[in-house]
Length: 184
Length: 223
Image (cartoon, rainbow over all chains, first blue to last red; front, side):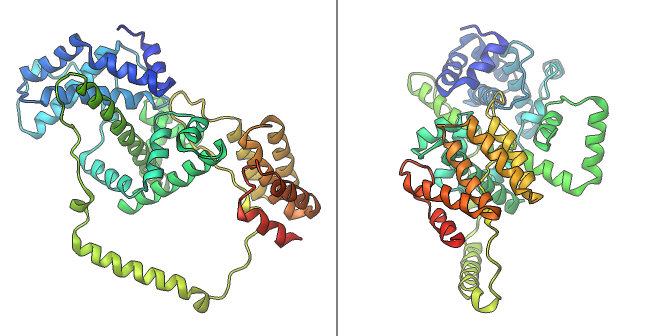
């Protein structure tokens, strides 16, 4: 399935169903999959490393779509390929693998890829903070993070009203902020 | 530009060169600004983690439909590895002391002044949004103005804005919340109006605040 740059971002933001359709289309895009896995294998990937990087690229793209200022200025496949290359170079550096020069530095394409990466140590801290949130709060924030409207959150959480959903989201966000602050 | 938009604009490289320079100078010289920015990044990253978990589930489902098995790219670290057992002991003692302090606080500390009537106002403003930004709605615009009026104790101005908000949100839960807030504001300067709203809320079983104990409590306090 071919998507227009603007259309694909809007589809992700529209609702969970259309977002999942985008994920499915990207994940089943054999050309994209083999280009990314091919790149990682040419540069020393073994086992599931290639598919992990492919999955990571899709996850990164989806989460970026939920940031209001994110714009896709290039073809989505090119964007995913760029993310995948960046991630593989990062992982290789960690494992001290060498990547030929010509495979490395054509990767930025005008995107601020650095801003999409969450430092591993910080990731552990964030996961610890999220683990300490109660199940309901985590669910409310997950729905909100996935761009659901307050009305939809109220429906899914069986809250009496949209106002109640807004209140719960506010309280959960406050709790999360304080947990993050405690962990810093 | 509020801080949310400013921080996002910096992260997504949407600031002009001079705005960027000012931003970076602030990061260097202003501890509060730097802390706010770091907290903003952490919260956004926490949202990213929640989205990742969700997307990962979708991909696993796709795998189950017949694709290669994937392994998670993100290490799954349990809390147990982050919080060693000896710290759990310290935490238990700490919790015991906190609980004891809480139970004895009334005996140790003088009782505090009763809460201001308007402190019951509930406005949960979204400081930012997800997706295309449409979730920042009319509620936020009114909410900001109402909060400012309350801070400056301009009760009448706050009440008028709440009445305006009610006019444009009739039939929604925002209306119910605005009505409760209006009763709390009226409690500061026009108790008769406040009582009449509170009684109406208590008599309306479909009202969002009908079962809330604070409605009865406020009514008893001002009567």
